[in-house]
Amino acid sequence: MKKTFIVLGILITFGLTKTNAQINFGEKAIGAVQKGVAGFTFSNADAAKLSKEAVDKLDAEHEIAGPTDGYTLRLNRVFGKHATTDGVALNYKVYKIKEVNAFATADGSVRVYSGLMDIMDDNELIAVIGHEIGHVINNDSRDAIRAAYQKEALLDGAASQSATVATVTDSQLGKIGSAIIDSKYSRKQESEADLFAYNFMKKNGYNVNAEESAFRILAKMSEGAEASFIDQMMSSHPDSKKRADDAKARAEKDGVYKAYVQQKIVNTVPVTTTKKAATTTKKKTTAKKK
Image (cartoon, rainbow, N blue to C red; front, side):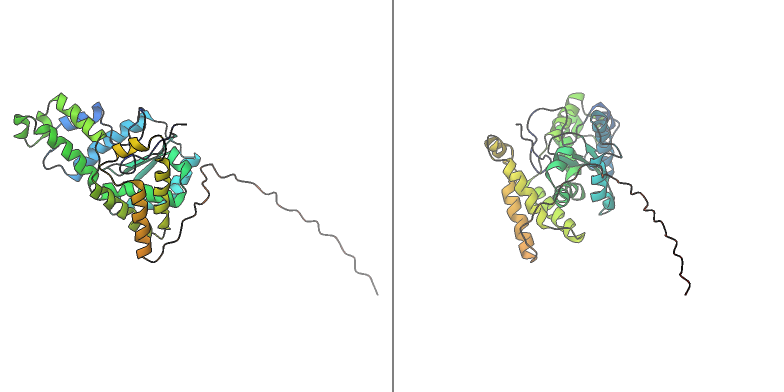
């Protein structure tokens, strides 16, 4: 049975699929770059614009759970109240894919794979998605795109003299797209995103111990045949076991630690039952004359 894993700061997805958890720049998104988005003064608005183009393309390529689908109903129930976080407007959708995955981009798009929702309860889901949102709030997503452009633009002397990416060649644009897809966050960025998730849960009254539990699940998934491959792929990232230990330490420091027990996971549409109105028949009583 093929095991799959969290991407974008959690784990790397194994196997080749037509999806990538990270920003997948297609022709439309690259076209936006060619129209003159500033490179070295790359702003949040620039990153959001390109991210929106990329997510629109991804949405068109994948099966999205409909508004009445059980996965959508659950995600809306869990995250509907968090339409805006730290000033960033967020939008949520579920990809009907049995991979364990989730990602968030600079425009506030949050995409969760049904495979993740199948193995994590509400609190654990909040911990994982909170981590992804943390990368957006901390501007990691924006900086990854900017770094990719700078790296490729500086390979060309003429391009490095320009304030815009309009002079970048098609070949360089292709390399930028590939770099974004393959980008990895630093240990510091990952740790800060973990801390954001913990504080997000704490501030909103969720069980913070679920963060440790979520990472324990991922650590368990990394055992076995793919363990050596994970060690190689995650060489620049803190491993899931350490991140689970760090989450536990935070909860212990706050004096709230308690081993987390996973709750029931429900991704189905609630069954509604209609009760027939009870009918009562009043008996006529005749008073006896004395």
